[in-house]
Length: 424
Image (cartoon, rainbow, N blue to C red; front, side, top):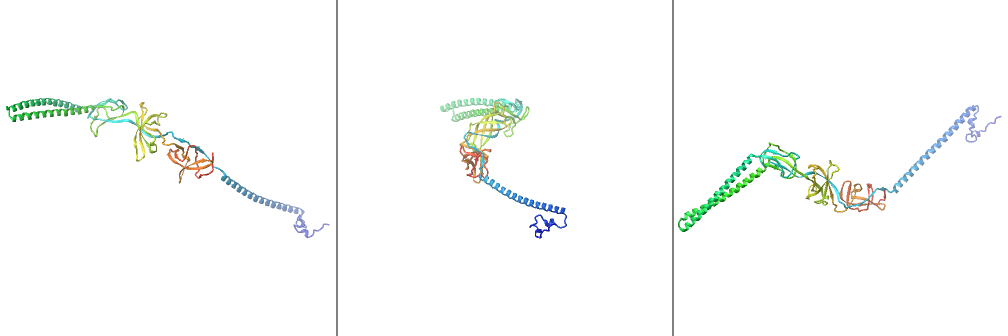
C-alpha cells in the first residue's frame, strides 16, 4: 500500500522541495502535474535572468560613469600639464635703404601754347599734330597787310624826321654864325644891343629845334622797331625742341592779337625728358635728397624699367597732407614714354637708424599699447615696442626688439608674460 505523507511534509519550503503538495494532489492528472512543474521552473529561470540583467545594467552604468569621470579628469590634467607649441622667427636688423612705390603722372618737361601776336590770316602752316620740331623752326606764317603798311609808313616818317634833323642842324649852325658876327659888331658899336639879343636868342632857338628834331628821330626809330617786332610775330616759330601736341588753326583762319582773348595756334611739348611729381610722406622725407636715383615703371609696358633721378623738391611739407613734393626727371630720348601716362615711381629711401622688421601678425595691441611676444628660455616674454613705420604686411620696429630675438608669430590673444611654451 502507498503511504500517506505527513502534514508537515506538505508545507512548501520545508520538506516538500519538489512541490509535492501541488504535484500530488489526489485525483489530479500526472501529465498536468508535469506541465505545471515545467511552467514554474521556467518562471523561476526568467525571474533569475531578469535579476541578473538588472544587476548587470546597474553595474555597467556605474562602471561607465566612473570611467568617464576618470577620462575627464585625466584630460583636464593633461591640458593643465600641456605646454603650448608656438611658431617663431629670428629678428634681424635692417639698415639698407628701403624701396617705396609712389604713383604719379608723367608730364612734359616743357609745354606751352602759342598765341597769335599779329592780327591777320594764316597764310602758311608747316606742321601738324605729332610733328617734331627744332627750336626756331617756322610753324606757320600770318599774313598781316595792315601791319606791313604801318611798318612802311613808320619807316617813311623816320626818313622825314632824319631830314628834319639835317635841316635843323643847318639852321642851328647858321644861327650860331650870325650870333657870333652880331656880337662882334655890337662890341664895336656897329650894331645895336637889341639886334645882338635877337641873334643870340635866335641861335639858341635853332639849337633847341635841332634837339627836338633828333628826339623825333629817336621816337620814330622806337616806333619802327616795335612794328618790326610785331611783323616778326607773323612768323610763328618753335621756342624749344619738342613735338606739336595740338593744332588749333588752319590755313585761311583769322587770328587776332589780343592780350586777353588772343587766338591759340599750337600746343608744343618737350618730351625728350619727362618729369613726374610725387608726394613723399613725412616719415620718409628725411631719407631722400636731390640727385638720388629713381626708377619708373608703367603697367602697360611690362618688363620695361625707365631710369631717372630726383631733380628738385619743394623744401617744405604740405600743411594739409604732411607730404613733401618732389619732381623726378626721366630720360625719354627714345620716345617710348608719352606725357600724361600714369606711372609708378620706385625710390630708395635711406633709413635714419637700423630697424627690426617683423610681420604685422606678430604685433599685439591692447590697452597697454603695442607689444610683441618673444620666446626666451622656454617662456613667453612680452615686450613693449615703438614703431618706426607701418608697411602693411610688415612693420619696422624702432625700439623694444634686438637682432636675434625669437619673435612668436600669431600669438594667442590670452598669452601671458612668463607662460611656458615650446618652440615648434
